[in-house]
Each structure stands twice: as C-alpha cells, then as structure tokens.
Length: 303
Image 1 (tube, rainbow, N blue to C red):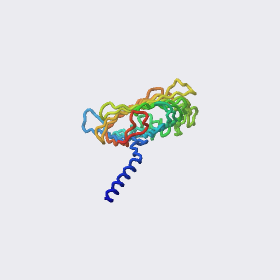
Image 2: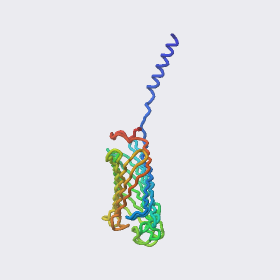
Image 3: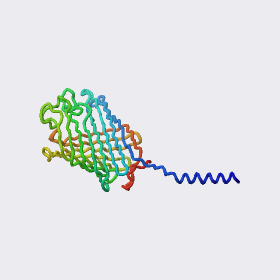
Image 4: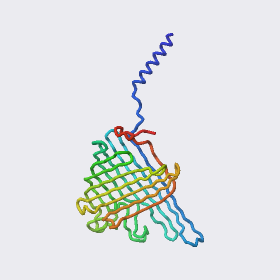
C-alpha cells in the first residue's frame, strides 16, 4: 500500500511540474527562403541546310530572402547573384548574365503595417562588358563596380502581407562608383570630370517587391524601383523592373524566365531590356513558413 501511495504521489508531483513549465514555442523569428540554380542550354548542327552554329551555355545564380520578424522588429535581407556564359562556334565566349544585387532594410513598427526604416543596397556586376555583345576586342563599357550603385537612406516600409513589401525613402543618398580607370571620363555614368571615380546624388527612392502564385508550381516575383535626384534634374527618374517567372517541374528541376527593364538617363537615353530563359537544376531552401495573416503575430511558424 505504501508503494502505491508513493507512486501516486510521484505522478501528481510530475503532473504539477509539467503544468508549471512553459509550453515550448514552435515559432521562430528568422526565416531563410532561397533558390540555387544551374541552367544549361546547348545546340548542335551537322549538315543542317537551314544553317546554325554549335553552341553551349550555362547560367548559375542564387536568390535568397532572409528575414527577421519579431514583435515590432522587421529586418529583411536580399541576396541576388547571377552569372552566365555562352560559347558559340566561330564567335567564342560571350557573357549572358551578370548581376550583383544586395540589400538590407531594418524597420521598427510604428502603426498597423507601417514601419520606420533604414536600409542600404548595392547593385553591380562581376565582369567587364563590351560594346559589341561582350566581345573583348570591342570597346569596354562596364566592369565590376563600374558602375556600382550604393543606396543608403531612411524612410518608411509598408508590409501588409508576406508577399508584398514597399519601402519609401524621402531621404536617400545614391553613390555611383566607377572604379575602372578606363571608364572615368566626363559624362560616363554621370561623372562630372575626367578621372572622377564617384558621383553623389541625394533624393527619393521607392522600392517594391511582390510575389504572386499564378498556379500550382508557377510563381512570379516582381521587383521595381524609382529614384529621383533632388540636386539635379529631379524629373529624370531612374526606373527599373525585374521579373522572375519560376516554373517548377519537380523538386530539383525548374524553368526560369527573367525580364529586366531599366531607364537611367546617365547610362543611355533609351530603355534597356534583358530577357533570359533557362531550364536546369534548382535547389530550394525554405526553413519555415512565414507568420499568419494575423499581424498581431509577428513571428514565423515552422512547418
């Protein structure tokens, strides 16, 4: 009987202890969502009357969104890196993709879906670009950090859902770097004098990111920005748009279609366009689902 009473007492004690312990929170503040891709393309011809040149190409890239969201804090980080080459018989190697896009933005909630925020960003490329389709024998027109654009500013961020973020910075410093001495001449990328390596601008920057699921395994990621320089010709807006259409075949294979539009008066007085299409290997990383639509819950739930 004593053993039975002792056992019952122990059970009650353990039960009371368990009730007093806090429930382990299955939510987390950090989430990392990203994709690593390697796209391949190839064409071969033999006695083909219609003609054609043998070619082989590749594109590799990473696209990561790392976000910390807890209580009133919102910290979003974006990493987009991409590079690609194509080798065509009789022509040689040509660059088909080259991008460096890094940004970080920290916000402190002030009301509803609005945050007071500060942030910075860098946009450039890895390798030289040439006037005649990246032909090394042609005139060089760009290089790493030539140009390189650095934005630093403060303003407000609006985030009503996990798929949409808009940042408005009425105070934004924009630095245009041209570190390649061969490209440091007056007028190039807005430089004022020969030998200058940097152009300073101060104005308004607005950015927006919107991700939409078109159908099962097909998503479209949109990124847009606008900049106006208060100090010189504010009407000359710098406009950019980037769209990535991702069509997932299975866990490791997907097709990507990208479209980039850019207008920058200091680069060229025309709208620039770049489009790519590739199919290949894709490895996705998703360490958790974002928070629910209930904005009172500022954390992310694990799967």
